[in-house]
Amino acid sequence: MSSADHGAPVTDAEVRRLFAHLAFNAQYPALILAVSGGPDSTALMVLAARWRKTLKHRVKLIAVTVDHGLRPEAKREAQSVKKLARSLRIEHRTLRWTGPKPKTGLQEAARHARYRLLAGASQKAGGVPVLTAHTRDDQAETVLFRMMRGSGVAGLAGMRGGNLMPGYEDAKIELFRPLLDVPKSRLIATLRAAKISYAEDPSNRDPRFARPRLRELMPLLAAEGLTAERLARLASRVLRIEMTLYDALNAALLKLAPGPWPDKGPVTIDAGDFQSLSEEIGLRMLERIINWVGNEGPAELGKLEPLYEALMDAIDFRPFRRTLAGAVVTLDQGKIRVEQAPRRRSAPNGAAPKPP
Image (tube, rainbow, N blue to C red):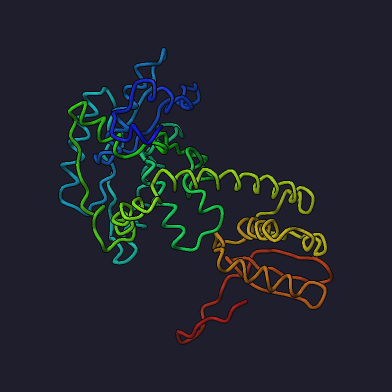
Protein backbone atom coordinates (compact mmCIF):
# COMPACT_ATOMS: atom_id res chain seq x y z
CA MET A 1 0.00 0.00 0.00
CA SER A 2 1.48 3.34 -1.03
CA SER A 3 2.01 6.24 1.33
CA ALA A 4 -0.34 8.31 -0.83
CA ASP A 5 -3.42 6.37 0.29
CA HIS A 6 -2.83 6.48 4.06
CA GLY A 7 -6.21 8.16 4.64
CA ALA A 8 -8.25 6.14 2.14
CA PRO A 9 -10.68 3.36 3.12
CA VAL A 10 -9.60 -0.20 2.39
CA THR A 11 -10.98 -1.32 -0.97
CA ASP A 12 -12.68 -4.64 -1.77
CA ALA A 13 -9.70 -5.66 -3.93
CA GLU A 14 -7.38 -5.04 -0.99
CA VAL A 15 -9.66 -7.03 1.32
CA ARG A 16 -9.38 -10.05 -0.96
CA ARG A 17 -5.59 -9.73 -0.99
CA LEU A 18 -5.25 -9.18 2.78
CA PHE A 19 -7.24 -12.32 3.59
CA ALA A 20 -6.14 -14.42 0.59
CA HIS A 21 -3.92 -16.69 2.70
CA LEU A 22 -6.94 -17.57 4.83
CA ALA A 23 -8.87 -19.19 2.00
CA PHE A 24 -11.10 -21.66 3.77
CA ASN A 25 -9.60 -25.02 4.56
CA ALA A 26 -11.83 -27.90 5.65
CA GLN A 27 -9.59 -28.47 8.68
CA TYR A 28 -10.66 -25.06 10.03
CA PRO A 29 -14.33 -25.10 11.03
CA ALA A 30 -14.08 -21.42 12.05
CA LEU A 31 -11.84 -18.39 12.51
CA ILE A 32 -11.53 -16.50 15.80
CA LEU A 33 -11.42 -12.70 15.54
CA ALA A 34 -9.90 -10.88 18.53
CA VAL A 35 -12.12 -7.78 18.80
CA SER A 36 -11.73 -5.35 21.69
CA GLY A 37 -13.98 -2.67 20.24
CA GLY A 38 -11.18 -0.28 19.36
CA PRO A 39 -10.76 1.02 15.79
CA ASP A 40 -8.26 -1.60 14.63
CA SER A 41 -10.11 -4.69 15.83
CA THR A 42 -13.50 -3.28 14.85
CA ALA A 43 -12.14 -2.77 11.34
CA LEU A 44 -10.79 -6.34 11.39
CA MET A 45 -14.29 -7.64 12.06
CA VAL A 46 -15.86 -5.44 9.38
CA LEU A 47 -13.24 -6.38 6.77
CA ALA A 48 -13.45 -10.09 7.64
CA ALA A 49 -17.22 -9.92 7.07
CA ARG A 50 -16.62 -8.23 3.69
CA TRP A 51 -14.05 -10.88 2.77
CA ARG A 52 -16.45 -13.69 3.65
CA LYS A 53 -18.97 -12.32 1.15
CA THR A 54 -16.44 -12.83 -1.66
CA LEU A 55 -16.11 -16.55 -0.95
CA LYS A 56 -18.05 -19.33 -2.63
CA HIS A 57 -18.07 -21.36 0.60
CA ARG A 58 -19.21 -20.34 4.06
CA VAL A 59 -16.65 -19.47 6.71
CA LYS A 60 -17.79 -19.30 10.32
CA LEU A 61 -16.44 -16.19 12.05
CA ILE A 62 -16.41 -15.90 15.85
CA ALA A 63 -15.58 -12.52 17.41
CA VAL A 64 -14.09 -12.80 20.90
CA THR A 65 -13.89 -9.81 23.21
CA VAL A 66 -11.67 -10.09 26.28
CA ASP A 67 -12.84 -8.05 29.26
CA HIS A 68 -9.77 -7.63 31.45
CA GLY A 69 -11.83 -6.27 34.32
CA LEU A 70 -9.65 -3.17 34.50
CA ARG A 71 -12.12 -0.50 33.30
CA PRO A 72 -15.82 -0.07 34.06
CA GLU A 73 -16.44 0.85 30.41
CA ALA A 74 -15.26 -2.55 29.18
CA LYS A 75 -18.60 -4.26 29.72
CA ARG A 76 -20.42 -1.63 27.66
CA GLU A 77 -17.80 -1.85 24.93
CA ALA A 78 -18.20 -5.62 24.76
CA GLN A 79 -21.95 -5.14 24.32
CA SER A 80 -21.32 -2.73 21.45
CA VAL A 81 -19.05 -5.28 19.76
CA LYS A 82 -21.73 -7.94 20.22
CA LYS A 83 -24.35 -5.69 18.60
CA LEU A 84 -22.12 -4.93 15.60
CA ALA A 85 -21.13 -8.60 15.26
CA ARG A 86 -24.80 -9.59 15.16
CA SER A 87 -25.45 -7.07 12.37
CA LEU A 88 -22.55 -8.62 10.42
CA ARG A 89 -23.81 -12.16 11.10
CA ILE A 90 -20.76 -12.99 13.16
CA GLU A 91 -20.95 -14.97 16.40
CA HIS A 92 -19.71 -13.15 19.48
CA ARG A 93 -18.38 -14.21 22.86
CA THR A 94 -17.12 -12.15 25.79
CA LEU A 95 -14.40 -13.76 27.90
CA ARG A 96 -13.32 -12.28 31.24
CA TRP A 97 -9.94 -12.15 32.95
CA THR A 98 -10.85 -12.96 36.52
CA GLY A 99 -8.81 -13.13 39.70
CA PRO A 100 -6.27 -10.74 41.25
CA LYS A 101 -4.35 -8.36 38.99
CA PRO A 102 -0.63 -7.64 39.44
CA LYS A 103 0.49 -4.22 40.67
CA THR A 104 3.47 -4.19 38.32
CA GLY A 105 3.80 -5.44 34.75
CA LEU A 106 0.05 -5.05 34.27
CA GLN A 107 0.05 -4.66 30.50
CA GLU A 108 2.27 -7.71 30.01
CA ALA A 109 0.09 -9.76 32.37
CA ALA A 110 -3.03 -8.58 30.50
CA ARG A 111 -1.43 -9.62 27.21
CA HIS A 112 -0.71 -13.12 28.54
CA ALA A 113 -4.27 -13.38 29.89
CA ARG A 114 -5.67 -12.28 26.53
CA TYR A 115 -3.68 -14.92 24.65
CA ARG A 116 -4.69 -17.56 27.19
CA LEU A 117 -8.38 -16.77 26.76
CA LEU A 118 -8.11 -16.56 22.96
CA ALA A 119 -6.26 -19.90 22.93
CA GLY A 120 -9.07 -21.41 24.98
CA ALA A 121 -11.66 -20.07 22.52
CA SER A 122 -9.65 -21.52 19.65
CA GLN A 123 -9.41 -24.94 21.28
CA LYS A 124 -13.12 -24.94 22.09
CA ALA A 125 -13.84 -24.28 18.41
CA GLY A 126 -11.57 -27.13 17.31
CA GLY A 127 -8.11 -25.56 17.36
CA VAL A 128 -8.94 -22.93 14.74
CA PRO A 129 -6.71 -19.94 13.87
CA VAL A 130 -6.92 -16.65 15.76
CA LEU A 131 -6.83 -13.34 13.86
CA THR A 132 -5.62 -10.15 15.54
CA ALA A 133 -5.75 -6.57 14.25
CA HIS A 134 -2.11 -5.55 14.55
CA THR A 135 -1.33 -2.77 12.06
CA ARG A 136 1.73 -1.22 10.44
CA ASP A 137 1.75 1.29 13.30
CA ASP A 138 1.90 -1.57 15.82
CA GLN A 139 4.75 -3.13 13.88
CA ALA A 140 6.70 0.14 13.99
CA GLU A 141 6.14 0.48 17.74
CA THR A 142 7.25 -3.12 18.26
CA VAL A 143 10.50 -2.55 16.36
CA LEU A 144 11.22 0.62 18.36
CA PHE A 145 10.34 -1.09 21.63
CA ARG A 146 12.69 -3.98 20.87
CA MET A 147 15.46 -1.61 19.82
CA MET A 148 15.06 0.11 23.16
CA ARG A 149 15.52 -3.25 24.89
CA GLY A 150 18.61 -4.12 22.87
CA SER A 151 16.98 -6.95 20.94
CA GLY A 152 18.82 -9.17 18.49
CA VAL A 153 17.98 -9.94 14.86
CA ALA A 154 14.95 -12.08 15.72
CA GLY A 155 13.40 -9.26 17.75
CA LEU A 156 14.05 -6.57 15.15
CA ALA A 157 12.19 -8.70 12.59
CA GLY A 158 9.07 -7.56 14.47
CA MET A 159 5.78 -9.39 14.38
CA ARG A 160 5.04 -11.88 11.62
CA GLY A 161 1.94 -12.02 9.50
CA GLY A 162 1.42 -15.61 10.58
CA ASN A 163 2.97 -17.88 13.17
CA LEU A 164 2.02 -19.97 16.19
CA MET A 165 0.48 -18.18 19.16
CA PRO A 166 3.16 -17.22 21.71
CA GLY A 167 3.10 -19.61 24.63
CA TYR A 168 0.87 -22.10 22.82
CA GLU A 169 3.27 -23.49 20.22
CA ASP A 170 2.77 -27.05 21.51
CA ALA A 171 -0.99 -26.73 20.92
CA LYS A 172 -0.18 -25.49 17.39
CA ILE A 173 -2.70 -22.65 17.56
CA GLU A 174 -2.11 -20.48 14.51
CA LEU A 175 -2.10 -16.69 14.87
CA PHE A 176 -2.60 -14.48 11.81
CA ARG A 177 -2.25 -10.70 11.49
CA PRO A 178 -3.84 -9.88 8.11
CA LEU A 179 -3.69 -6.09 8.66
CA LEU A 180 0.02 -5.92 9.53
CA ASP A 181 0.85 -3.83 6.45
CA VAL A 182 -2.18 -1.52 6.77
CA PRO A 183 -1.78 1.92 8.41
CA LYS A 184 -4.14 2.55 11.31
CA SER A 185 -5.36 5.71 9.55
CA ARG A 186 -6.81 3.61 6.74
CA LEU A 187 -8.73 1.41 9.16
CA ILE A 188 -10.23 4.49 10.81
CA ALA A 189 -11.12 5.85 7.36
CA THR A 190 -12.80 2.52 6.54
CA LEU A 191 -14.98 2.71 9.66
CA ARG A 192 -15.86 6.36 9.08
CA ALA A 193 -16.87 5.61 5.50
CA ALA A 194 -19.18 2.87 6.81
CA LYS A 195 -20.43 5.12 9.65
CA ILE A 196 -19.35 2.57 12.26
CA SER A 197 -18.33 3.83 15.69
CA TYR A 198 -15.60 2.39 17.90
CA ALA A 199 -14.23 2.70 21.42
CA GLU A 200 -11.01 4.36 22.60
CA ASP A 201 -9.07 2.65 25.40
CA PRO A 202 -7.50 5.39 27.59
CA SER A 203 -4.68 3.02 28.58
CA ASN A 204 -3.38 3.39 25.01
CA ARG A 205 -2.49 6.99 25.94
CA ASP A 206 -1.42 6.36 29.54
CA PRO A 207 2.17 7.66 29.95
CA ARG A 208 2.81 5.16 32.75
CA PHE A 209 3.25 2.51 30.05
CA ALA A 210 6.15 2.32 27.59
CA ARG A 211 4.18 1.82 24.38
CA PRO A 212 2.01 4.94 24.78
CA ARG A 213 5.17 6.95 25.40
CA LEU A 214 6.68 5.57 22.21
CA ARG A 215 3.43 6.36 20.42
CA GLU A 216 3.81 9.99 21.44
CA LEU A 217 7.30 10.04 19.91
CA MET A 218 6.22 8.63 16.54
CA PRO A 219 5.22 11.99 14.94
CA LEU A 220 8.59 13.51 15.95
CA LEU A 221 10.49 10.52 14.55
CA ALA A 222 8.41 10.61 11.36
CA ALA A 223 9.31 14.29 10.89
CA GLU A 224 12.96 13.20 10.86
CA GLY A 225 12.22 10.47 8.31
CA LEU A 226 11.80 7.52 10.66
CA THR A 227 8.21 6.78 9.67
CA ALA A 228 6.10 3.78 10.59
CA GLU A 229 6.35 2.67 6.98
CA ARG A 230 10.16 2.68 7.08
CA LEU A 231 10.29 0.90 10.42
CA ALA A 232 7.94 -1.77 9.06
CA ARG A 233 10.13 -2.07 5.96
CA LEU A 234 13.15 -2.53 8.22
CA ALA A 235 11.32 -5.35 10.01
CA SER A 236 10.56 -7.10 6.72
CA ARG A 237 14.20 -6.84 5.61
CA VAL A 238 15.47 -8.13 8.93
CA LEU A 239 12.97 -10.98 8.66
CA ARG A 240 14.68 -12.08 5.44
CA ILE A 241 17.97 -12.23 7.35
CA GLU A 242 16.30 -14.07 10.22
CA MET A 243 14.88 -16.74 7.93
CA THR A 244 18.29 -17.25 6.29
CA LEU A 245 19.92 -17.67 9.71
CA TYR A 246 17.13 -20.05 10.73
CA ASP A 247 17.88 -22.28 7.73
CA ALA A 248 21.63 -22.12 8.40
CA LEU A 249 21.06 -23.11 12.03
CA ASN A 250 18.93 -26.10 11.06
CA ALA A 251 21.59 -27.27 8.60
CA ALA A 252 24.26 -27.01 11.31
CA LEU A 253 22.09 -28.89 13.81
CA LEU A 254 21.56 -31.73 11.35
CA LYS A 255 25.33 -32.06 11.13
CA LEU A 256 26.32 -31.57 14.80
CA ALA A 257 23.29 -32.74 16.81
CA PRO A 258 20.76 -34.43 14.52
CA GLY A 259 18.52 -35.80 17.27
CA PRO A 260 15.97 -36.84 18.23
CA TRP A 261 16.76 -35.09 21.53
CA PRO A 262 15.55 -36.37 24.90
CA ASP A 263 13.20 -33.91 26.63
CA LYS A 264 15.57 -33.33 29.53
CA GLY A 265 18.75 -34.02 27.62
CA PRO A 266 21.52 -34.67 27.51
CA VAL A 267 22.33 -33.21 24.12
CA THR A 268 26.00 -33.60 23.25
CA ILE A 269 28.04 -31.73 20.62
CA ASP A 270 31.65 -32.11 19.61
CA ALA A 271 33.43 -29.02 20.96
CA GLY A 272 35.76 -28.73 17.97
CA ASP A 273 32.87 -28.77 15.50
CA PHE A 274 31.00 -26.22 17.62
CA GLN A 275 34.06 -23.97 17.73
CA SER A 276 34.19 -23.93 13.92
CA LEU A 277 30.70 -22.42 13.63
CA SER A 278 30.19 -18.70 13.05
CA GLU A 279 29.41 -16.81 16.25
CA GLU A 280 25.78 -16.15 15.31
CA ILE A 281 25.04 -19.78 14.44
CA GLY A 282 26.88 -21.00 17.53
CA LEU A 283 24.83 -18.68 19.73
CA ARG A 284 21.61 -19.82 18.11
CA MET A 285 22.51 -23.49 18.40
CA LEU A 286 23.28 -23.10 22.09
CA GLU A 287 20.04 -21.18 22.58
CA ARG A 288 17.97 -23.80 20.73
CA ILE A 289 19.37 -26.66 22.81
CA ILE A 290 19.11 -24.80 26.13
CA ASN A 291 15.49 -23.87 25.40
CA TRP A 292 14.71 -27.49 24.52
CA VAL A 293 16.35 -29.01 27.58
CA GLY A 294 15.84 -26.33 30.25
CA ASN A 295 12.71 -25.72 32.27
CA GLU A 296 13.09 -22.00 32.99
CA GLY A 297 13.34 -20.65 29.45
CA PRO A 298 13.46 -19.08 27.07
CA ALA A 299 17.10 -18.11 27.52
CA GLU A 300 17.67 -14.35 27.46
CA LEU A 301 20.09 -13.14 24.80
CA GLY A 302 21.82 -10.84 27.28
CA LYS A 303 22.65 -13.87 29.47
CA LEU A 304 23.29 -16.27 26.61
CA GLU A 305 26.01 -14.13 25.04
CA PRO A 306 28.37 -14.08 28.08
CA LEU A 307 27.81 -17.83 28.58
CA TYR A 308 28.77 -18.46 24.96
CA GLU A 309 31.85 -16.25 25.25
CA ALA A 310 32.97 -18.02 28.43
CA LEU A 311 32.38 -21.41 26.80
CA MET A 312 34.46 -20.45 23.75
CA ASP A 313 37.26 -19.21 25.99
CA ALA A 314 37.24 -22.53 27.84
CA ILE A 315 37.44 -24.78 24.76
CA ASP A 316 40.93 -26.34 24.41
CA PHE A 317 41.98 -25.08 27.85
CA ARG A 318 39.79 -26.15 30.77
CA PRO A 319 36.51 -27.80 31.80
CA PHE A 320 33.43 -25.58 31.94
CA ARG A 321 30.11 -25.71 33.77
CA ARG A 322 27.39 -23.07 33.87
CA THR A 323 23.61 -22.95 34.32
CA LEU A 324 21.13 -20.93 32.24
CA ALA A 325 17.33 -21.09 31.91
CA GLY A 326 17.09 -24.36 33.80
CA ALA A 327 19.81 -26.11 31.79
CA VAL A 328 23.39 -27.01 32.68
CA VAL A 329 26.05 -26.54 30.00
CA THR A 330 29.28 -28.47 30.61
CA LEU A 331 32.48 -28.88 28.65
CA ASP A 332 34.72 -31.85 29.30
CA GLN A 333 36.98 -34.09 27.23
CA GLY A 334 36.17 -32.28 23.99
CA LYS A 335 32.40 -32.56 24.35
CA ILE A 336 29.75 -29.91 25.11
CA ARG A 337 26.88 -31.41 27.05
CA VAL A 338 23.53 -29.73 27.81
CA GLU A 339 21.11 -31.29 30.28
CA GLN A 340 18.36 -30.17 32.60
CA ALA A 341 19.60 -28.55 35.79
CA PRO A 342 18.66 -30.22 39.08
CA ARG A 343 15.85 -28.54 40.97
CA ARG A 344 16.98 -25.87 43.38
CA ARG A 345 16.61 -26.87 47.01
CA SER A 346 15.12 -24.43 49.49
CA ALA A 347 17.77 -23.22 51.95
CA PRO A 348 17.04 -23.24 55.69
CA ASN A 349 16.10 -20.05 57.56
CA GLY A 350 15.19 -18.23 54.37
CA ALA A 351 18.79 -18.11 53.07
CA ALA A 352 19.31 -18.04 49.33
CA PRO A 353 19.83 -21.53 47.88
CA LYS A 354 23.21 -22.33 46.44
CA PRO A 355 23.32 -22.70 42.64
CA PRO A 356 23.75 -26.26 41.35
